[in-house]
Length: 307
Image (cartoon, rainbow, N blue to C red; front, side, top):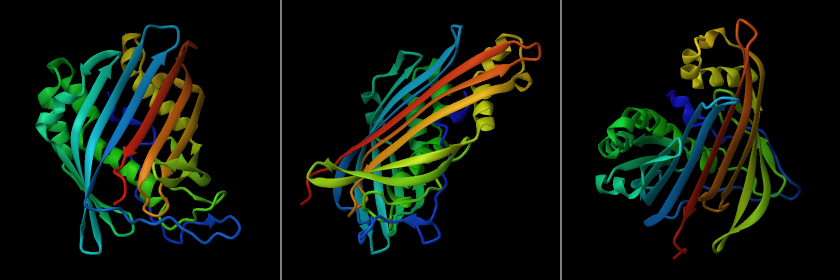
């Protein structure tokens, strides 16, 4: 299975939050998002992902559902660096609806990933992802080991954590907090290119008042089609067809992306990315195939009350 299955927007690039990104402020705006994490605390971060591809009118279905739970400790080094120590507590997996891991099996491996951040909220480095991959190889049943190790490879885990960091920090720090404010988004890769971030509303998040932000994208239909061909390559081969021989007749992708952050710390609380797409492929003899795919990601953090 291709690592692209993690998410269509995988491979997010780290971008600067300097004045090179244009922003539009609401009237009387005077506050900006600040990166000021509370240190010497621990919180829990839960990440869920459902990824599914099916061929209409057939029995072909390829899906993976995961739930990852981290315990995160935040420390500081001088005035310039922060460290997010992520210890893996649970990792639950289902493949095509069948349980592969319940979740707690991974805890005994004590795998830890360290995310090193600059004072302005940019990722300097992420280390230790190979520990998670190796831990999974230890606990996953042999029949699923290669597939799971590919999806949760060190590179894909880095991408996943980089994406969340860009969401909560890199595209947000220094931008106005007022409702209606907008700025350009540089998020995304592959079929998706970030277009704009909007400060949509204020929402409660525990004792804090957070901002809910929405991100919009431009979509490249050709790259959506390429993704679909790769994801059903096995099905095509079984049908006697080469993926490269299938022409993209139609490609649609609907994307909804929201996230919730604290303005005065940039601690994120919730993030939701939902993608639904349809691609119609046509073979050399005019035979058509409809590929339907869904990817739903949620991320939630629970913080201790401020001291």
